[in-house]
Image 1 (cartoon, rainbow, N blue to C red):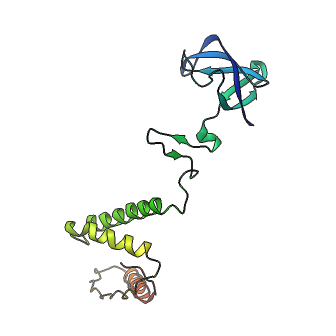
Image 2 (cartoon, rainbow, N blue to C red; image 1 turned 120 degrees about the vertical axis):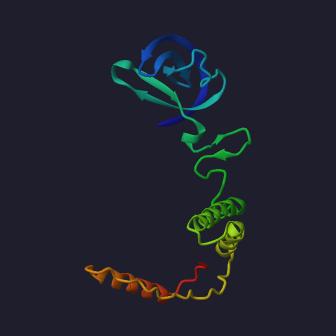
Image 3 (cartoon, rainbow, N blue to C red; image 1 turned 60 degrees about the horizontal axis):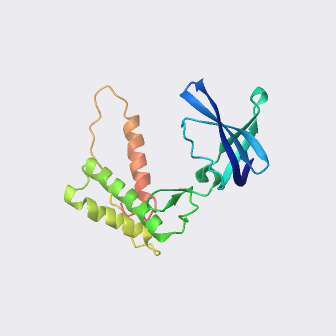
Length: 186
């Protein structure tokens, strides 16, 4: 269970060798809880006397009570970087945040436009224009009128001694796809 409390005492209490190297032990008292904290640093900074922290106490059989810090990220408060923005699964950036949504749509649109370039469907000079058209289409409140694509029938010669069933399946798929009513711009 995650708790919140003021750190009352932190006392170094030796070290031990673990699978990740030397671990340093500290006896920590937060509020009414006292337990052991182990960390990689000889100068731990997770528990500072006088500061309020989120922490968790667990009972580990013969090893007694363990206290471990709970980062703001784990507690849902967000871990902040030097920019001051927090990243905690949406606690700071709301899903209706227009700037964030626009960035997501632009990234996705650019990705798809680059895919089209790789598939040699568009020239390199049109990548940003196509990406912007995708973005405009996705972000518009009204769906723009889109022409149904024209599908040209491709004459494919059936190899000798092979079944023409796969060819019929492909032609049926193309024919059915051309009849679908979708309003995608591509």
